[in-house]
Image: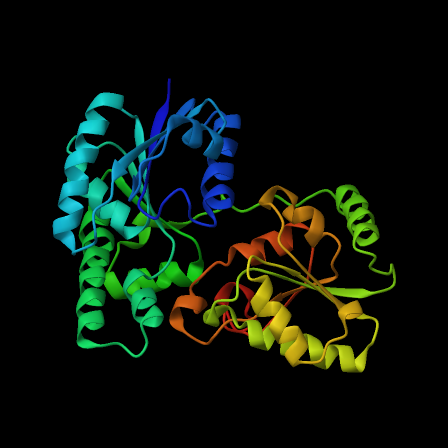
Length: 341
């Protein structure tokens, strides 16, 4: 039996856990790449077995939770590595995948038998921390330095080990890591396994008709869709402002917003004097995401100009592309930019 261990530090309650962790793992199981998967997740709270089963009902995936203590740099991760080492000794996996540099650091110090390992590079840990704590105090700069040291160890030192491969989510992030931490070019690849497959046009057409009928959207309307939250870096103001300008040009335009931040977007719609007949704001389960995206004609994705956005691979962009939507963006994400090779 080929068994892999997937190490997670950002919680099973992360908003993209289902789409970016569970679904790709099930796909790997279905393709017989692995026969069984154990997810080891560091959590602040304890979960009952019934909750863990509901999070991942596939019997081929087993979830183990370990206690997550407050982050204090490498000292906190040493404790995490100690507990993971015991788990690895018990489950004896053939392969390990670490999601992000913190999980990568933990695996680097727990994997004493040099089990083949993939470290998934999802973004820039230190830069994301500084971005979230602007303007940065001395304490935030110190904490960001701790994150940077962890990234340097994982991508600079650990990545050179014969049994380790780094898997970047984008070409831009791959280049950044190589230039910043001198990761050997042959040791870092761009991942494709977790990119959603294109959905058959017949399905898209059927879903388009069904959802437009459900939401009373005219067949002739040009529907712009935004899927995501209302965090500052996701530019919710710019998104609604863009649509308001389009609506002035074409009263046949319609805005569909799929979000958990209904109040924020509702306030923005009112601020821009959008008639209620021109937009619909709703929260939907992820299982229905593609059904609603299929009702649209154009996906909206605006981001602030910053290196963390430039090297990213937004999940929403992948979902838009899966149903064949062209994406209206502001040239701040390399994978969408016309200025990248």
